Length: 205
Image 1 (cartoon, helix red, strand yellow):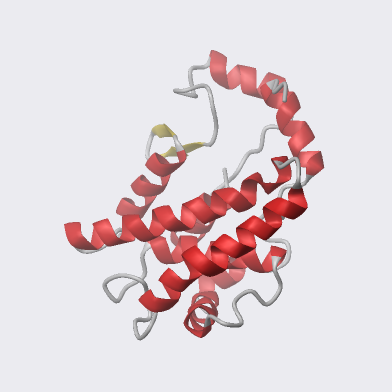
Image 2 (image 1 turned 135 degrees about the vertical axis):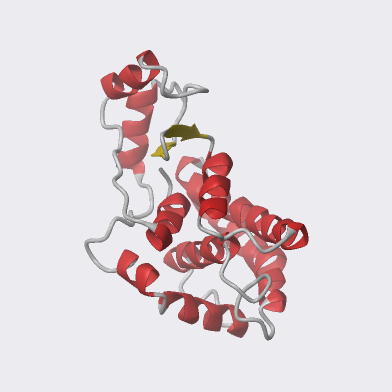
């Protein structure tokens, strides 16, 4: 389960997470019919075994009232969320790049020129991105800013609204607990994790 899902869970309820550490674990899930499309993440909640990241996130957002008050709010939340996810995915896939230095430069450029200005403008005045209340888009954006700062120290220095937003979000007790040392938040993926993933899922690249 990725960081975005875990962060959303942390705002809503306690949860247990299980990471696959062997191919046998994965094959057992397949044998039991737990993975609809033969892939993870998979979240067990309310008697269901949900797969596909967006389906999981949307269900949790709806369950915990993090998806806006009406259809228009939801459309805005979804647009902001998809933008954040585009940027997040570039960061998460960095470990697989054949040229990490060039990829880092590309990510930083796109973050500063395409994505961060959008959120900086959206947060001119409002406390949250949509409708004056916390939504899943705010959660995703916080996680993204933290991931960016792990790669590019000081990247938010020219985005004062975003930095203030991050500070407010970090004051939410559940978020604060989630980021404390020893919490369930995981460090960025490294080559050791990539090697394990290749073994578990029998990847050939």
